[in-house]
Image 1 (spheres, rainbow, N blue to C red):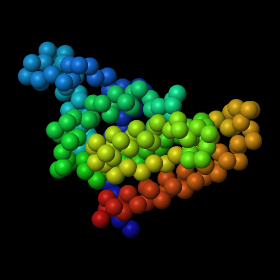
Image 2 (tube, rainbow, N blue to C red):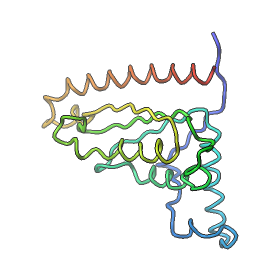
Image 3 (cartoon, rainbow, N blue to C red):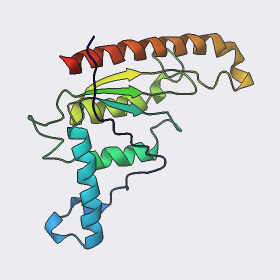
Length: 182
């Protein structure tokens, strides 16, 4: 059996959020004020982390039909045209990214809220299309069913969704570990 060893970078965006970008992010770095230079240096740190990752795991719960603003700020910082985006030979190309995208209801195809699924669609556009990452989603749904009496009839569907997500997480982890070890 092969043992994988490496560095794990844990970035909790709730307790240590990336700064939201402003118009200054699009100015010439040579003209930055000291504060802008510090923000740009932090942005480059986030990009370096992503570029050096063998694999990435992102937790993306659905909040009010979208991703948390802290995740959006991290994405805004890591998308840098000419370095991570818009380049055929990006260092990011093909890096496996697993997104655990939980939601309290269901937005799956065929459900009444299918048209309000903005998490997977948005993250696919940014991660796969713009950054050329190899994205896989694990999506447990109906997580509020056990907490909301009005959803009590959906508890069996939540339990099935949870089990599917756990099984998918195990198989995805094994596949990524095999890929990295190869």
